[in-house]
Image (cartoon, rainbow, N blue to C red; front, side):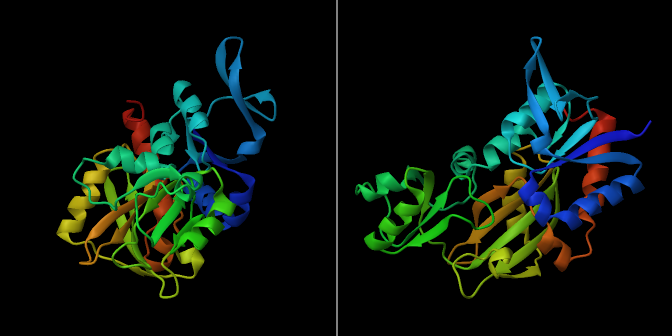
Length: 292
């Protein structure tokens, strides 16, 4: 009997990732996996007759053998796991890594260099309770792809940002030593798959989708040690760990992308990340390592 899985997206991101979805479906077929692409808007989940339940189009459905979750909904990830359905990534990874404040809090004190980081709101900063001098960077806790990231150089800019963010929870950080340059390290389980250096001479944000450049990058022994310290703290499926650089070119932890985009990895290498991910999942299922 074929291994059955679900590949879940929300509609907005599914439209942008049609080719990636087709890649998943094609590689799954080659590996003998019956992988169904499902929009999360078709799914309802909760409790029925005192038991946890997942419905598809308001109907009961046989549970899959695994789920690849390409949407951000830690509660749904946890529902799957409580129903003994392995979810990649896990609810723990989703809960921590999709919140920049939680991620920094979780990794603090573990020998991982990171920027001075404060958990606050734009309202609070505007009252004068500012733990950092101008200029500094404001990021929403749940922003992705460089969205909702602002450099604030004075009170007037802070007021403008406040109008956009209001009471949303944010983090505030000083500028990195080398603005407009960052490193994404792709991790599968406990293995480093590849690394991509991203740079943007026109912005302090290096994101490729915002006009940055990307090139393959070889990690030094020191950098490998930094990445592995982070890997040790989680049970990852597939993630991207992002770093900034200090004035001396050393890595500063920035964030972890749970639903990581793989475009830059694809254009800078010949790595078949989708096949590797599916093979990793099959190996996890065969050994029963998916539940801890």
